[in-house]
Length: 174
Image (cartoon, rainbow, N blue to C red; front, side, top):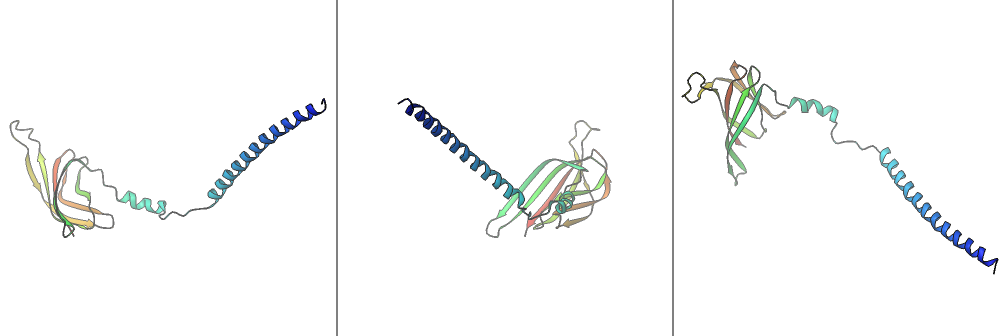
């Protein structure tokens, strides 16, 4: 009996060690699986559908100049559901930050801008009881840049810094 008891404790300790060893071995297998999975995924190179270095030039070119800052937009759109088109009027209130004779806007290539009007708003500082008087600015030309989705309005004269204006666009989608 005396010899059997220490052997029994050794079996218990061995089983206990075996269970801990099995748990440790299982943990090592799981850990090695995750390490192997990480190595396989890191070694495979996925090519992006667009090269961001080449696209950077396109992105920076499509940003609007900071010469004019818009303060509000007023949109009136009339949809024609059967044709899948619309017509509308867009009025943008803006302030000139820098002196320029160009107004650059984002415009989709499918939107046809049919008429443009730019009004300089006199704030009426000289006459306190008068309302602002708009002066229509002469447009030299307009151009659409479909590759960059831009619409540029060229004015005949430069507009000075701090001038407020309203830009009205009448459009129809094709």
